[in-house]
Length: 115
Length: 113
Image (cartoon, rainbow over all chains, first blue to last red; front, side, top):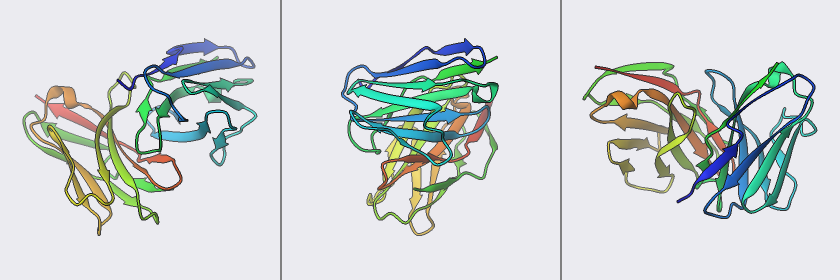
């Protein structure tokens, strides 16, 4: 139980284009989903927290107009990187929680490379 | 939000021996949780163990135990009987009242045969 999937697992896109990453909770309803970014050999940094049906809460320094988050249902959240640039290349990981931060289930991550 | 500090960038341990990975935290929340995750080279985050701030007993999960010293604000992970498959990055994380989780910088553990 408590499986979270991400799609795609890896993506290469050209600078200036947009890319969408999906995060799905497969066997539970996720009231809250979290998006993290991890640069090579660094830790996970929380980007934003989203609750179903409401706007995401972004961490300080994360551009909400660049990283669009939509938590449209209790099983799906999407992260869209708009006008991607090479510095956006990173490992993006989502996690889903049925309730509260103490219970988070992580997706396998999406590796984004912007050329 | 919590601040999590892991001061060991890398650790080596001989197979079958025990190893302790250090983690200290700083929070003003009264209620909080502390977590350890393992991240192999594939990138997935594997949950290992959880300790609640009000738990009086140290958490244990198989070969993993958490040495929780509240007064010192430390939550060290102890891995007993290390195996080659334990080689990975290990992250300490903390969550509190703000419904967010913060991660430490991580420790790369290498198990030597």
